[in-house]
Image (cartoon, rainbow, N blue to C red; front, side, top):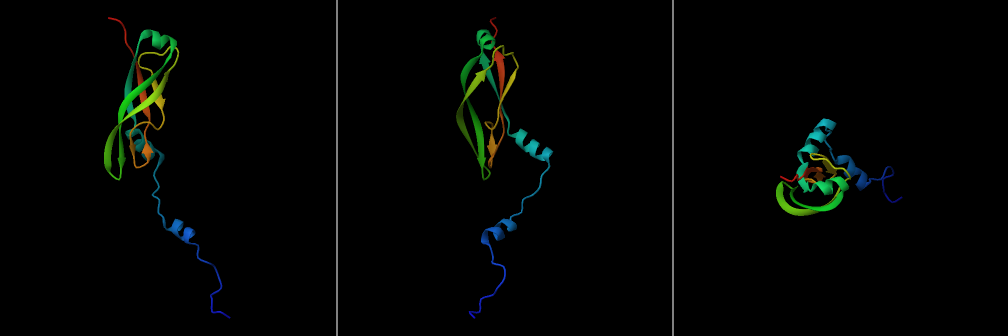
Length: 117
């Protein structure tokens, strides 16, 4: 006999995973956090672009916070304005808003139709 103990082997990964505590949050708490990261940006289009639809590149800045340190960066996002878009219509691009520690809000693009004066 070698003197080794018989029985269950220790699994380092299982031990590590069982040591992690994940606080439970309610759906409403998660939504509040997520919505706080939403970013609203206007997109100005002409009446003809609103009527026929168009593709536009939207340039905006967003905040990315990692380990409590916020940084601003310019971002470009391709936006498809649908046919017959209306002034005030909102287009949502999931995950392109501000972000904090891996959680990102949505980019909400408000269509603004420029009317001739």
